[in-house]
Picture 1 (tube, chains in turn yellow, cyan):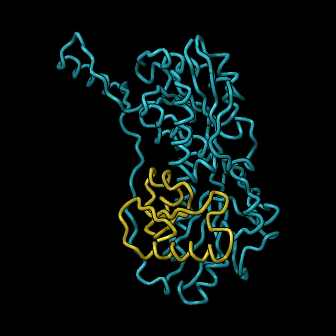
Picture 2 (picture 1 turned 60 degrees about the horizontal axis):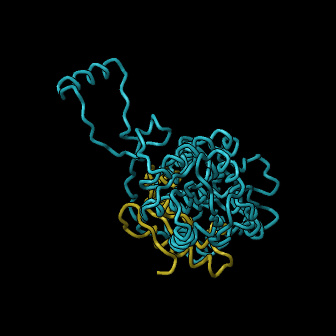
Picture 3 (picture 1 turned 30 degrees about the vertical axis):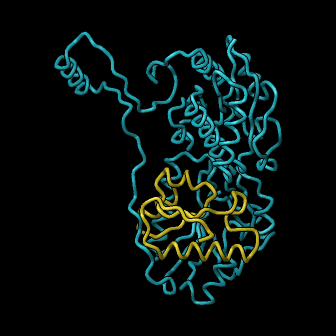
Length: 73
Length: 342
């Protein structure tokens, strides 16, 4: 719900979550599937870098409503 | 005697707490945990097996876990599948709903129990949801109602309207023969509406928010970090709640290159925080974002992060938190947000 309200304010937001189906159900527009519930931004720095870079690409992308991206392109 | 199979998460199946949340699907003989109370309340029906799965495992392997659990359920050839009660637990409720839905689609009558705001409610398809309280204190009240509906479904009974039979509306319509004409009933309905006395199962769906535009040039954008993962300074100085948070918090990132373990921690009560506390950047990726700012990929990082605990928070409360945080971010000129949820 946080993601949705921040989007409503017109701020482009990527929600990184391991439960993208729930996010899309409530209408979050940009969701990136994180690797796990306990560590959405990865275990180590190389993995985190891949996730954050993918999230940045999603911020730059013109996406359809309730889009979900995977980290591996 | 008809046969029931019961779905539980790792906790209620007695396998362990959050540290066992990665347990794959498994089968246990007979009734386990709350299944014993359910079995006692079931008339003329027996719980022949319990199937269980860790909440994290299910969330992270949704399709495989659903298929494996459905196989375990089908092997028992039950007359009904019962899932939960999951109360307000999002992961458990969602898993319960998916298992119930899969069973219902495979022709096995299915009923799940959870709080009406559980995200699982929207994922249950044509299975039945019995509403419960928001937490385990509602167990005693929920089990007899769950057992009553499970028993009826197991015996092939057709349920009446949701409101009368004690389950959540599914938005299904059923034709009925009335002894009064449409014109008469339309006038009755109009009069009732004028008198403020009408009921409906229609509506209540989530609204939609248009997708905000892409950021044209991130190297000149102000980006903020937000999390629902309960990440706070060590010792939780402002007492953020681990469940049903009553507040969101803002903490300065000035001078911080990364979220140092021992200086930050997670107080989230809905997942095992061991890995997060070993390295809080796994929840709020400050280290990587600082690097990317240094490299010019991101223009600037907003010098505070926002945090709350997304665990059993009522939708209305979470919406208010989101609006308040959004207002601050907008006033600060933030254009982009990375938000982590667990």
